[in-house]
Every structure is written in C-alpha cells, then in structure tokens.
Length: 118
Length: 115
Image (cartoon, rainbow over all chains, first blue to last red; front, side, top):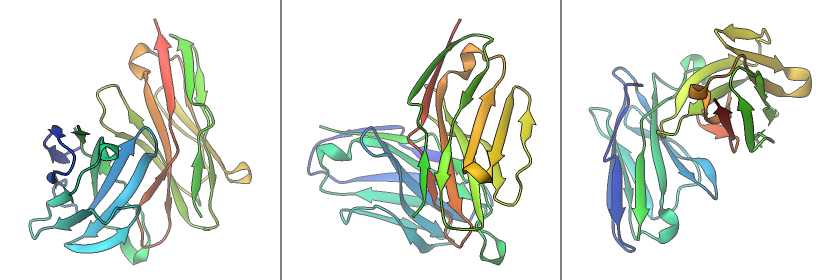
C-alpha cells in the first residue's frame, strides 16, 4: 500500500458526460501528479500540483482540468467525455518537487481509477 | 526531448530462470533520475528503485539487480531465479533533474513467469 488513495476505483459513464476523480496524497506529500494509462498512449503525464499551485502541464486536453485543495487532496475533472478517454487514471504524490530546485523525490502511485466511457 | 525505450514488449520465462529487462533512455540533461516501477495484474504501480545520474553504482536488492551505464544510456533490470509472482508489466521511467518532477515512461515490458 503506497499510502495514496484514489476514488472511485471504477467508473462507467456515457459519452458527453462529466466525471470527477479524487486523489488523497500520502501524509506529508505536497506534490500531486496525474497520469493517464491507455493502450494507445501508454503512461502519459497530465498535470502536476504543488501545495495548491499548478506546477507543470503535460498532454492534458482542454476538456480536462484539475485542482489541489488546501488539505492537499486533488481532483481531476473530465468533461464532454469521449470513447477515447477510457483509460486508467493514476494519481501519484511526492514530498515536494525537490529541494534546491532539483527533482529528487520519488513518486508513489495510487491504485488508479479505471474509467470506461460507453 | 526525453525518451525512454523498452524494446522488449513481452518476455516469457520458466520459474527459476534469470531474466533481464532492458531500458534505454535519451536526455540532454546532465542531472536526471531513472526509475523502475512494477505493475502487477491488479493494476497498481509499485515503485522499485530510483537512481540519479551521478551514481553509476549497480544495486542489488534480494533477487533484483540494476545495471546503470551512462556510456550506453541504459538502466537494465535483472531478476534472478524468477518466480511466478514476478509476472507483471515493468516500466522504466526518467525524471529530469530540474524543477519539473514529471516522469517519462517507457511502454513497458510484460514479463510472464511460468511454473
């Protein structure tokens, strides 16, 4: 058990709908990362938050958004869902993005949310 | 640009065989970090090891060992005396030594260990 929790574990919805995925980082971790795992694209970085602020963006669609709350939990919002959005969505956390500006911290992953869009 | 290549898509071995999973990376950074993660059939991603670019010392942890060679930009993972429980997808990943902590993943190697 990595200490990172994600809910729900499974989500089945229809095209055009909107869903919210939730992540609670490990105790003490300030950084949260979201990744998407699909057969086509593999594991792709979506977005990173550090202590409530957006830190980095990857290949995140405009239909997707995220935020990190004061209690450090994070939510990933996916809207206008398409069939191609079906994937496993992971959240990871680390203590911070590193001291002295260096990224040294290991990311620990949650169990993932499997999204199926029908 | 950062890139991680795991050329072996699938590997099958019989229990007790040794197996090496290859990982080749590309980066222009002088400071970077390399990782291996394991994804068992249950789906979660389990951290195995992290190495930084300044430390080329090989590491052994039980039946697992890692060989980091900067000269060939490789970070290979060997499982000695494989077991059925080692069956999983193994991912190699790279993180830049900058303020960005994102991981660049390879496509993974599916390892199947037969009894």
